[in-house]
Image 1 (cartoon, protein in one colour):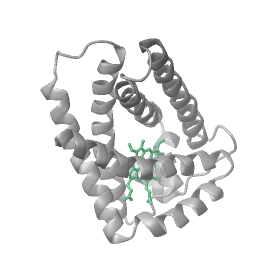
Image 2 (image 1 turned 60 degrees about the horizontal axis):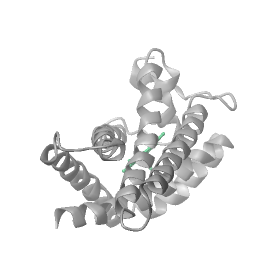
Image 3 (image 1 turned 180 degrees about the horizontal axis):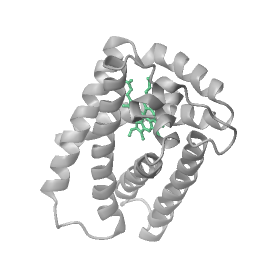
Length: 204
Ligand code: HEM
């Protein structure tokens, strides 16, 4: 039952994250393209009922994920079984920190949590040493976690070698997309100026 709920909740979060990451990829083109898309997408996920459902799924996913890690502690064998716990554990940490930061910035600092909010930490030294791996690993962990789910769900349909190849391919795609998203946040494609109200939250 808990596994089924974890999967259903993963589908709700997954649908949001797929569009969310596409939104971040648009920053390869320009900050304006990123912000315009986010403002349109917010018309859907900021509908109170939708946002409450999404945030409830995030809370449930963190709690059930930590439970699964503890329940099978020391019993996992092979790369993909271990990666499932590792990526899930990182996602639990990331979601708590990330969604907590977004809600805190919105309600306490009254900030528009757009591209500038996401990129600010990378543009105030020494916070880039935290935020670059923090964002990079989040996107890799999402792809890694999905890769593990595919690896498990296809166990009766494909050979182990084929399932491993699919898993490594998903992980590699995640790493490339993640590097592109983080490079865009860091200003790797064009010059970025972060407004002072965002960098001020890091003491700059
Ligand atoms: C480089 C990677 C990422 C960046 C830069 C980023 C940035 C952001 C930003 C700026 C917001 C605020 C959106 C708004 O104000 O409307 C946000 C919200 C959110 N992000 Fe991310 N995100 C990233 C990856 C992820 C991943 C991998 C997940 C899931 C595992 C995730 C889950 C969420 C959730 C659940 C929200 C809250 C939506 C809401 O109710 O406002 N993000 N993210």
